[in-house]
Length: 176
Image (cartoon, rainbow, N blue to C red; front, side, top):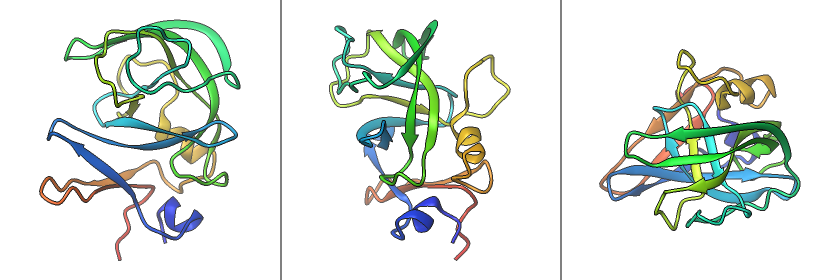
């Protein structure tokens, strides 16, 4: 048993949803109440960004970040498709599954305060990109490892565009 899902809940990898063959979305859980938010899983960028309740230009779901710690670091992030987010880095408990035992106690991410994203269903982006970019924040897989949630800084993704049974498995690949 290598996946955190098997260790914490015993029910296998996290299901990802195919959005018109353009991107994949899945859940992440935030704060002490483990609020479920749907994010794009992006293997090409390193940053986690999320709409927060004070964002007046965000069209998608928003996280109530009243329990977050704001760092005072303001930033704008832009993507290849022209989407851009402006906000402040903040920290809160972040979990890849709905289990309080499989969490990063205080993960730093970009709390979006302004957005030009037209999506009404997505709360943000989970960047799973590797080190080596100009990004100066925390890397999600590194922090899962440091928190003891996974035994190595890796993940496996299985994409299936026909049945929509796509998954992410955090930690070493399950070879069974």
